[in-house]
Every structure is written in structure tokens, then in C-alpha cells.
Length: 95
Image (cartoon, rainbow, N blue to C red; front, side, top):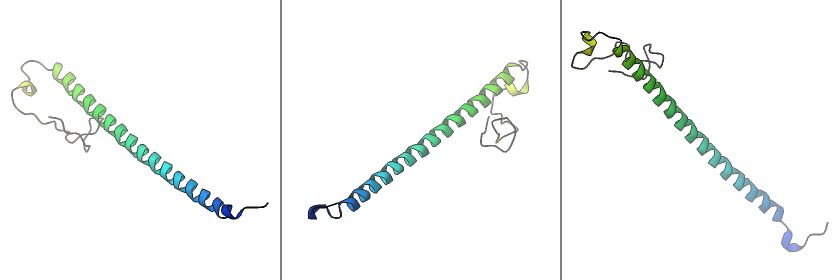
């Protein structure tokens, strides 16, 4: 193949530009993956907390009107901090 003098080294420049584009695209995809993971975790935590709150509301609905848990004041849950299953040693605190 015959190359003109102005085309020497042009393939190296093309490879370098393609490499830079690849790195930029990879960084963008990594960033969006991390952000979507954070959003998914936040949604999961909110759903778990909501489920624990609804479970407590259902428990309170089954109590008799004279039950001590229905008196005025602050009542801490004995399992605090709790897991999504309601058992202890979790990240949620219900009161």
C-alpha cells in the first residue's frame, strides 16, 4: 500500500480517540449503574419500612380499647432496631 506523507501516524490517532471515547462511555455507564443501585436500595428500604409500619398498625387494630399500648405517650417497640422481618438487630426503629 502506498501512503501519502500526510497520512503517516493517522491510525495511531484514530486508536487513541477510539480509546478515549470507550473510556468516557464506560465511565458514564458505571456512574449510571451506581446511581440506579442507590435508587433501588432506597426504594427497597422505603418499602420495608412501610411494611413494618403497616404490620404495627394491624397489630394495634386487634387490641382491645383498654390495652396499655393504646394509651397516650411514646411506646418503643421491643425489637428495635429491627430487620424487615420484624426480628431484632436491623436498621429500622419503630415507635
